[in-house]
Length: 95
Image (cartoon, rainbow, N blue to C red; front, top):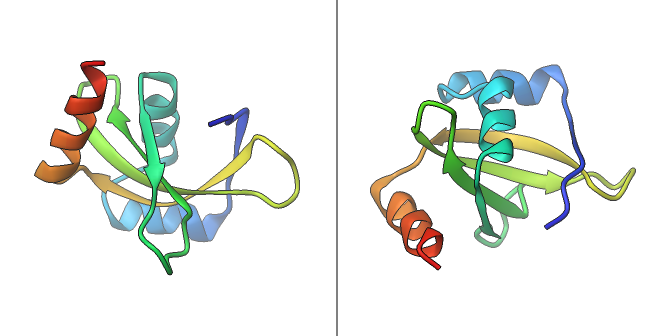
């Protein structure tokens, strides 16, 4: 996946905060070594970005590509990764 930068607004940042996540965490995960997968059908976000922040905590971030510019993405929401998400990430990190 190609992500060149993030698009932010107050609503999405508030949703991230509600779940214990933040803009800073999203950017840290993006710059570390995330893995990407399609999100569940009929969700606001098309993909999930799963990976660690600089402290090693693994996060699940739901993202969608902006319709304005290729490479521009928006984080819809995010939370500390669940055990199945951590397992999924670790399995894909071994290859």
